Every structure is written in C-alpha cells, then in structure tokens.
Image 1 (spheres, rainbow, N blue to C red):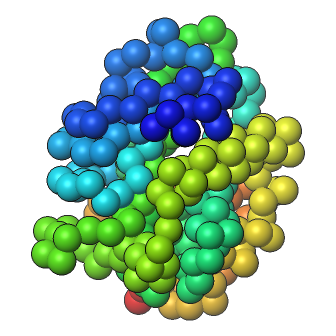
Image 2 (image 1 turned 180 degrees about the vertical axis):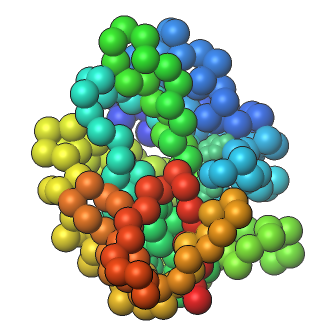
Length: 248
Ligand code: BTN
C-alpha cells in the first residue's frame, strides 16, 4: 500500500481491508474529497454493479478501486464509461494480456467472459462541477467455485504472474490521463481506439432493455459513444444507460 501511495502522489489514496462498497464509501465522503482521491479495498461485502445489480467480491483476488473525479458542467458524459474501458484494456495489454476485448459500453471481456466491470455514479452538481465516482472491479484470481451468476474470467488465465500493485498504479495513471483527454478532446478522440477493442463489431447482437429487445448487427459507435445497431428498420443508436448488449 505504501508503494501505491508514493507512486500515485499527489493523489490521495485510502486503502481499506474490508468495506461495504468503495463507490458507496467515496459517495458518503464526497464533500471532503479532492479530485483524484482513490479508495482501494481487499474485500467488499456490498459491491455494486451496473443497473442495480450486485458485484460479488467476497474474497481477495480482485482489484477493487473507486476514484473521485470532476468535470466542468458543460462536458457530455456520454462515452465516459467507454474511455474508462479503454484505459483498463490498454493497461492490461501493457502487462501482456492478450485476447481481451470490450463489450459496449464498458465490460472488459476475455474470450467472451467478463474480466472487469465499471460503474460510474454521478454524485451531484455542487461547486458548479460534475462530481463522479468511478468504480472499477477487475478479476485477478478468484476461487474455483466463485458463485458469480454470469460467465467470468480472471487475469491469471492469461498472465500466470502479475504484480497487482503495479497494475493498479499503471491503471490509475492511464485512467487519469485519459479523463483529462476526454475533457479536452471529447469522445471523438477515442472513437477509433474503442472500435479496435470492440468485441462485437459486425456481429449479430441483441440489445435488451426493461421491456423489449432489438436484434441487429453491431456497427460500432458514433462520435459521441452511442452504440449503432443495424436493424431491419435501419440504423438505430442506443445510450449506455438504457440497454445491455448480448450476443444474438
Ligand atoms: C458492473 O459491471 O456491473 C460494474 C461493476 C463495478 C464493480 C466495482 S468494484 C469497485 C467499485 N465499488 C463498487 O461497489 N462497485 C465498483
């Protein structure tokens, strides 16, 4: 933990052995936080996932990380989670991970199974800024019978030896750099890079929402980060908050 704190200075780092949820913890402290505040945990007993789901980390063997970030109020947050996905994928690739891809909007997949997830929570708009908590969970090495109700993957499948602290340091450095670039240049800057990571490009997929689903061919994203689906009615665009994507 000391190494992480030194290398990520001046950003403040809190390391919690056991916590309900690193996202929830930072949300509770938000009034006192500085931009770039990190919270890391070994064990999370009430981890949150996207769309109201749980995120199970009932054991060490994950990266469990939340970061506090702010943007000026005029920034469109559409595409933000895609940029976070790129930062995770590129960091893992820099450590030698191969065969990983991104599932829109921001799951990191290893051969179709989930390796990492991202949950961005918007806290409030005080100080005239957008206040966000960015939560990242990455499976490194889980127990054999991990009781996770979707196909999951872990980093050790592709990297038998890795240094978790070094991955965390590299991930945060890359993430913060990309968040600055996103603020300055927008989603368009990351468009082609995201497309290269897209695990479903030109493949048949279903987009599932609460009460309907649409089928079509995935045609990547537009310059703002909306997903493009080629359907019988033509090209339809989707926002990440509305739908989840499945292989058809
Ligand atoms: C998802 O794919 O559904 C998103 C999962 C996000 C999990 C991370 S782990 C660190 C942070 N704290 C939480 O409670 N959730 C996020």
